[in-house]
Image 1: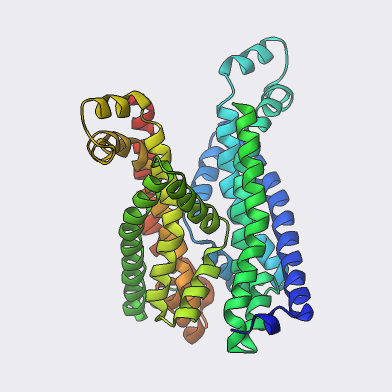
Image 2 (image 1 turned 90 degrees about the vertical axis):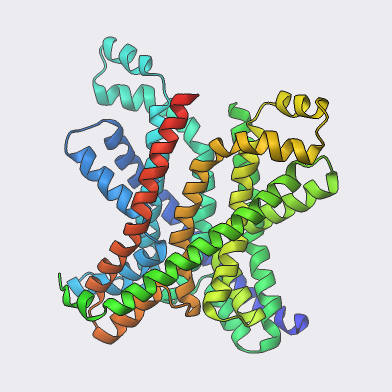
Length: 216
Length: 211
């Protein structure tokens, strides 16, 4: 095991560059999936006939498929019908589709957790359904959604490692390049990569727990 | 939709399905045993044991499964499927340990105190009084973990484990029919995960009612 060679300044910078892309991808994907998941979750909560049922089926299908399959599908299968993305956008789109399905469930159960009387009171004070949803229900539900959303972000950050299968130069991909040079680099590189993921995710999980404790 | 992809490659699809199912079931059983063990470590009346259990759970939960899989595969030189099943077990154990711990903690403290004061040892009280009651609470989250396990088993494809995802890659590379192959493979996954998730949903509802 060659720890000194594996941890040369060049290698560490190379890995950190990969990690930077990992973080950026995760950040973009969580914002996009919160918006998409928010729309889907709210529409399902509003029980709009037909639309809600169609969305329910789509969400169930996506939630029950492996993310790896969705990544392959986005990158390799969609070009067959003329939809082509570069590696990074393809990975972000696949992550967004998958996580939006997860987040829509978090958002829907957050909305469901608000007492029904709130909606009735808002409606009888003259607000329309969507005004009541936007001004009364959502702000209260949002606070309850924060801890599970942070947990979902941790999953997302780990899931970005799957983008390696379509050669996105994120952390896992950069690690493969480093340990591919020399067998002695294998263990040191994998250890430092684990450490990078761990530090960020562990910090986030402590944050998520703090938020949960504050709430109760 | 080109169903000849299915009929022409049915052997490969079925082989992949078998491998996916096998890896998931073996990893589930192994991580149930290990997860129960780690959960007991985390609530045992001994600081060192608590600490060991916590380190395992926090470390494994916060790193990607793919990294664990590459580590087991490349460092220990196992075959793809063996390495994949071991890595799935290591990873899922951490989540199952947390589910079981939460289940045990949901049982009122008075149960343990009553069992202890009627003369049972800590281990006996845990095994005979606490765990049987905790199982009811723990089953729905365990079902969710099994669904995750089936989905996560697709990573075995990355280390050439011969699972469903791996066969799909082979078929699409050979036939150059990509979309239909992936749609078919998606159906095979849904065949496993949808009934499980309906089952979990049903159990969750029943549990909510009984409380």
